[in-house]
Image (cartoon, rainbow, N blue to C red; front, side):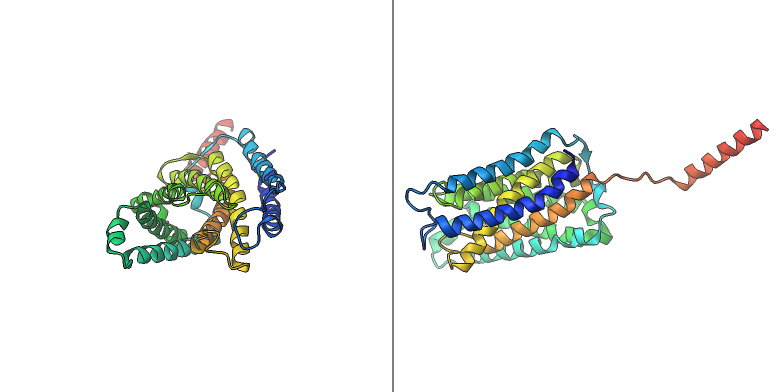
Length: 294
């Protein structure tokens, strides 16, 4: 199978996963809790379906060509593929600023002084820097800001922020493996970290495009699961119960959507530009051959 076949399949697959996840939460959860009903094993059927969807896109690793790509792929991109990054950047900035404000304005003096030594503090700092990088990239359609050294430095904050979030999940969530949302949050953040590592390498040097593509597809599957969790929690007023940070979840979903747009650029064939000098030399050579034949 080629890239276009997988790329056409990703949209219906994530829609199907969203519908299945929402149905799973609606029928299999204990009312008012974030746990499955006692003795219910049907949720494992849904887990198998999600796993099969992930395996299907992971198999693309053996079919996609192993070629490198660099920052040049963004030079002739459509403007909307840049500007779409403003939305995840905005929500990521709002979420990190709110969390930093909550940490700094804590009434507990001991907790306030301890906050500077927590992973949560550095997570929100790097998330704020990552938000700035995304907003700058959204404005780079005309100015090519992604070519600057400053941007190449701050874009590294994207994978760092998600790696810190992965550590934060294990430290803060004591029952991460028991609740319905815990394992999917871990998988989502883990694949987003790998995906953003490849994404940042595109600007710094080069990366294997299929590494970026496959981790993006896998992250998309588990992100849409978390989107279904968020919508279910909003409708049933269970955001606190399910430990969902709404700003970060919206930022993740929008970032995945923007990256899916960008992913198509990696597989477009580049047209070789013929310089005017090269064209003149070719014409002179052709004229010389014609005179010699006469």
